[in-house]
Image 1 (tube, rainbow, N blue to C red):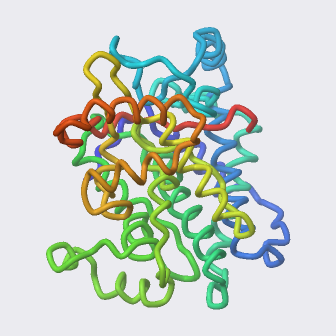
Image 2: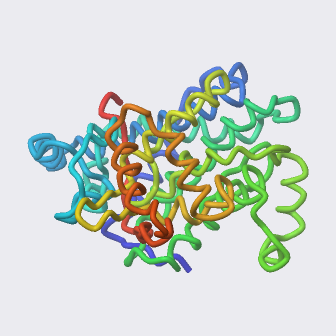
Image 3: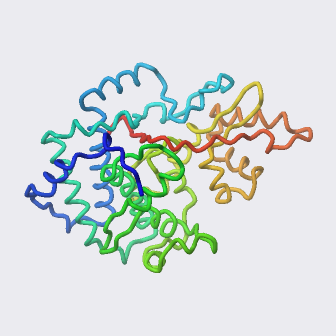
Length: 344
């Protein structure tokens, strides 16, 4: 079972207030599935950001801004790492376990947000997903995956210890009722947005989940969802809201921004540190490390310092050196973390 950290758990009185206080239903029926998913994500992000900006958290935000460029993935922790601009990630707001102070949500402002969240989540039960286009499905299910995880943290709290065996438990427990089906984040990530099961792990999914894949699964998965699915860990990408109209360009932008912020280049050793998140999904972008690095260079801006540094590292390998020898793995970090835009 997912062991809760009771100091980081939403007080039961708050849930009772949310469930018992009469709410005036908005015109949910006029929302399309995509607009509803966007509104749910906006509400969840608003709750997390308000927690961060309330009480003692204000001091944390000020100290973060005063410290200069944010380094969310710690790529500059090594003295040998080449200093550079990491792009938009340097201006994000970082939400960590020390920010998760639920004692500050006993005021009416939070109550209204949780009531709105309840209305929105209840509206999911009635959505009609039968006639969505590929782009609409893609944006909707990315939002729903990330909403499941965020809602799960609010509902169950944080684990006592951030470790590889705790996250899968939350992913299974983080569930929403979507179109009359109870669907968890694992089903969305593995069966709807991807087809990552094989003969070895297919048995972990029941007939119900496989039927959900038949109903809602994308015919052509988009590999760039790797840079959109957020698990609330330090190695996860920034959490964003995806729209049906712009999901392709939004995923492209998320990919480039994540790569700029998560790749480390060491000057003296001529080493390139790649995040385990990227290497785990390597076969979506290249069959082995050589085509992966070629793909990587094509994704980064030609005039950017990161691409130039990577090319410079490879120049030293032209005389018989192996590209794999220049690549290091940056291990996946399961520490709790969310990254939000500072404009939210």
